[in-house]
Length: 343
Image 1: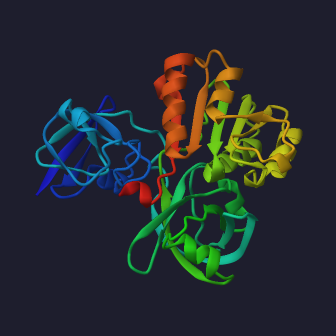
Image 2: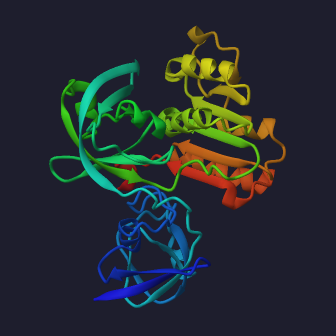
């Protein structure tokens, strides 16, 4: 049995099977609903149920609380329709522009610029380019069918010369995939992936200055956005804040210093929360979102792209909107939820 799902205010509608999550059907049909993790953990797909009834699958209370559900909010990634449904959600122009595809990839190199960070470069099929927006992610399909998500750190135009992507992977002790990356992966290994996914990507037609906010390996999609803006000659002022614990964790510091030196409209601000005495750090310290707030008393004309630890993303969104006048619709986020965060 299928039901009709209508999205307001756009008026777009599509069919969804009774036991199918609304978001899965939207992705398959190229309809741009906002989303992040697809697993009921991040809350990016939360929207209002105007009419109809859904049944929710397993999800985190922080993504959708019982009170929010009672008030008529739904998570489209785990909500299956039981009747025809009307939702109120902003559709994301371009989110369904590129088809989601499965393809093999070959490991070209594995570098470890920090003790717990690996940069993997993958070769993609030469005659089968992966089209995506700067900021989106892919999923590895593991042998047991489970999946792991990683943002692409390379801009889309790089596919034209040499099809391949770069991923920044943080070591999660005991993690099924990252243990293999750090202790077993070797060049020439074949990995199966699917993508692109996600509604976190650069809005190219939005006016006004841009703030890019990253913590840890949340820098990966931010790097893709920087590369893309430079390639396109995007003249909007960009302030990039990267928060890490200590100096060794700023694993792409030299790349960013050079990018800022050669890109007049780009300002780079590294922020360390726990610098070591041996770092001899003279730069900014503390929480990265507070550095933004110290520099910008008014964010009412800005777009903010935030990526990294869920606590950083959630806090930045709340504080920027509440205390700096950021319009809620101008905050775009990709919260890096690990498998541990989902249970």
